[in-house]
Image 1 (cartoon, rainbow, N blue to C red):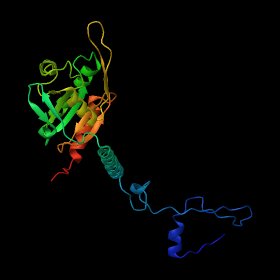
Image 2 (tube, helix red, strand yellow):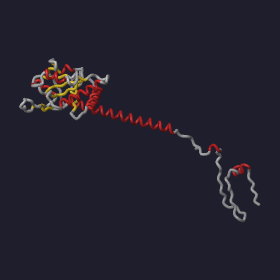
Image 3 (cartoon, rainbow, N blue to C red):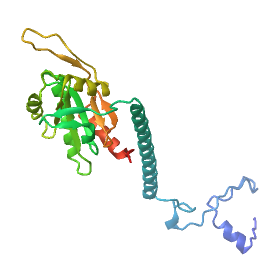
Image 4 (cartoon, rainbow, N blue to C red):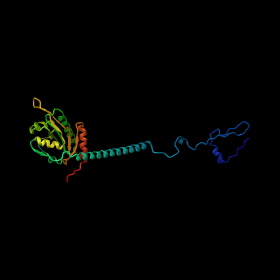
Length: 266
């Protein structure tokens, strides 16, 4: 008979061994003893992590969302700053091109004399064309009017003056211009003048035009540059828009120019 004498503390530890604790071999010799101490967890603690808890799922999602919003805001700010720099560089390059330098003297569709100084303090969208144009001029003037209407719908923006200058002074008299502009916008201003006056303002804005041969009805087409010009309140040429630009694109560009405008006149 094998007698085991254990101290109380050792016996207490042994009582937590999961059976079988001892394995006996034939002949009464003790073989390899396998044992596993039971954890001191109570029934309610089973399966719970013993270490400190991290942030919950909701907190992690909130942190991720805030981090993503911060990155998105920084990207948008950098993009806006880059676009503003590009716009300023373009404006400076166009200004150095010396387009629209000097003054002009023309008559509006009500017979009043007009010069560049009359538009000082206003944003101006200007188009060169002729009233007998079959399609391009009406389309471009309609687009110009759409831009003006879009900007008019925003109370915080200054008004934009639409201007139409003829490149066909022979047929586009004051009366002809008055009949023509009323079909587009109540504030569209038609400008005409003598052949020399029209040639002078056209050269100033680098506008090419050339009258074609007359047919049997003495009708003819005028070939000319197609562009909408933007003038700042300083009266300076600020930008131009080709036929490929939509009304929405032009309106966006005008808004950016308005936001960045700083008068250079004192």
